[in-house]
Amino acid sequence: MENTSAPISLLQIQSVRLKMTDERIFKFFLVVATYSIFIYLNCVMFVAVRSKTAFRETSRYILFAHMLFNDILHLVTSMVLYIFSAFYLEIIQAFCSLLALISGTTFTNEPLNLAVMSLERYIAVCFPLRHGELSTPERTFLALVVIWVLGTASMLTDILTVVFVEPSFLLRSGLCTREQLIRKSWQRDKGVAFNVLFFTLVAGVLLYTYVSITLEARSVSTDRSSAQKAMRTVLLHAAQLCLSLMTFLYTIFEVLMMSLPLDVFAQLRFVNYMVVLLLPRCLSPLIYGLRDQSFQVCLWPYALCCRVGSGSPRPRMGRAVQKMCVCVYSRVLLL
Image (cartoon, rainbow, N blue to C red; front, side, top):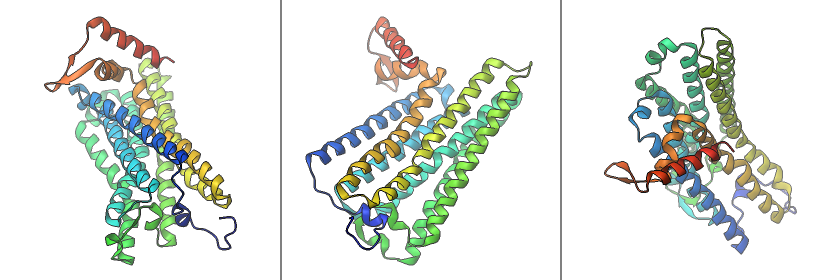
């Protein structure tokens, strides 16, 4: 790589084939195991949040369930793309485009979902008498439709552009990379513009809702306990947004490392993938779910101390053991 006279594109660097060594096999299983663990945890939380009627009919938990479902889709598609990349598997580009569409859409959906969740908390604190009227399940599902429409806009435009420029592209076989969908310079600029617009919009919503809730918390007529909880929730959403923003650094770091020798690049690229791209995305929904007090009541007893049968959890162990599970779980949350 260092002896190449012409600049190497990101698409070319992604296509570099490395030998399958013991080290690469270990890294592969480490990444797949990490994906699998967090996919399982998200699935457990999703089943738990869907297990109670009160959760299914509350806007806050509908949005949380959507965040979990969205991240499950993102993690599954990302793991599939990683497996294809690790073994240099060539697949039909139509299937690759579908995976890229799901991965890109779910990536964009998360910050938009955080903005809607913050607005829901803002309405609950600042307009408590109208909260039931404004935050209905029907309006929440309408907001989710808008999120998915906005989330698909950028990736769908790229796919349609490639099909227009090269109609036979979807029928070809090849390595599956996101860069293959970038055929025009304006596409990259468009992607950056969309990401900056969405994340700036979400950051503005989070800032506005936090300031409004803070001012409302100082009011004598406000339930300060609820306001304090809402403020912490918005701050938590801001932390999740920062984790999402970290994934933008992945491509930047990868481009900066392209001038390094191949063996050094391979090592740093793996660290970049794990620390900057994978772990922040895995931790985002877990942080929110484990800090929600209402959700805590059913999560670990449901996951560890019950078994599913006849459509509802049934006790598998005695009450004393179940209480011990809840106690241990509560202590873990305080760490």
